[in-house]
Length: 543
Image 1 (spheres, rainbow, N blue to C red):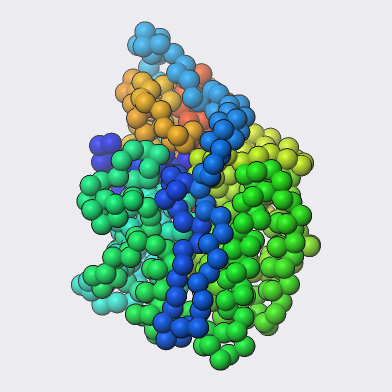
Image 2 (image 1 turned 120 degrees about the vertical axis):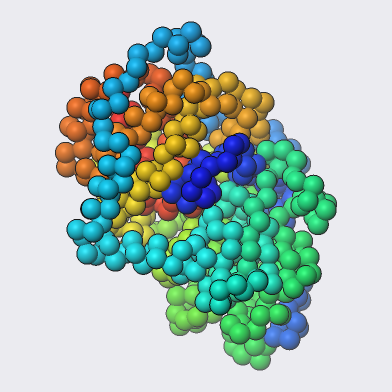
């Protein structure tokens, strides 16, 4: 679905602006091996929380027992229809050799598209201010978390050498990495990031295995000390960096509520996990969700401990996010916006206003296709068909122009409902990384390599050079349509594709391969990703 720098290296992911598309070789895996992600690592927190007893271990977030049998059955159902077209080679080598040359004048060139995007930004004061606010400080100092940054300095003086290095997954999918990532962003501790290949893509680098023989992530080095478990990392960060404490004092009302809330998080996780994987346990989940709803009303404010975010919110965030995505898709239960859980929705709204969470939050599509390879399969039940196709973009208007401001079953953050901003900034990302993007998309017709366990991951498939000019032109049509806007985009695309002399079947195959691998947050946020997906569909339909 969903990478890095402005230039792509050989064998590395291609770039959408400063972010890249998923399932590429250098990310090594968008999915972690089940037994390397710990469901609830023990941790104790000195000084402020010496009282804290060890937390219950609960379920591990990974394959258990016969989970692989579930995975094989469900993954075939899940991915068979969605990726049937884009998983096969369309034409033989001989057919590609005889393809007609594209009419490269059918759409604006990349320099002209870049200039047009900048003109649209400059002519709209509000749009310009928003873009400049997001891009002005650069990845090292941006207020918002940056999925592809390798260094975060925040307000530290230039030349500061961070005391913390975080080793996390390249795809930004690991929930345990997310906890540590959120804490570092909230405390604004300067840190370096090392991206680690994940196990379903093959063996991790020897350099990483020397410090973490099991291969598990996250790992952190804090002032020279290596910490191989997420909760141990949280513990050490709180112990060493005390300026913005995220754990309440023992003798406070919040302190007395702290540990019971962490135990509730494990109960909620266990209930959701059991229902998702085993297919039963709905009542246990509903009960735990209701208790979470009630707990959020204990203190005044949107967060678990009141008006200020704490470590409790950070512990809940990764799995509440995954519950919101997976429950409608697999169980037909809408979690967000459900009047039964108003406090949980208020909590989400508050989190989505935080610069840390805004840069880290994924989308439903990414989550629902990342989960099965991690946990051994997910079982469909209930009224899932009401929402599955909406999330996959295969029905309704979720990936179709015109898009609604608020989104479909997945809500668009209030701050991101300016569709012009989402269209133009997504187009800018495409323009910035067009060479690598076009090369990546041609892999739809390239020679396949050995398979991997994650159906979306296709790191060993080769690109198809004979299609690069054709796909490049098709992407220019996509970019021009996005800059043109919704009202006349369809008619404009029809004219461009008619002039293009593009082979419809082969070009559409490459565009769909790309569309299905746009990931959040690594490439862009949800509002931007749905724009790019929708405009790719507009061109696919015209072809």
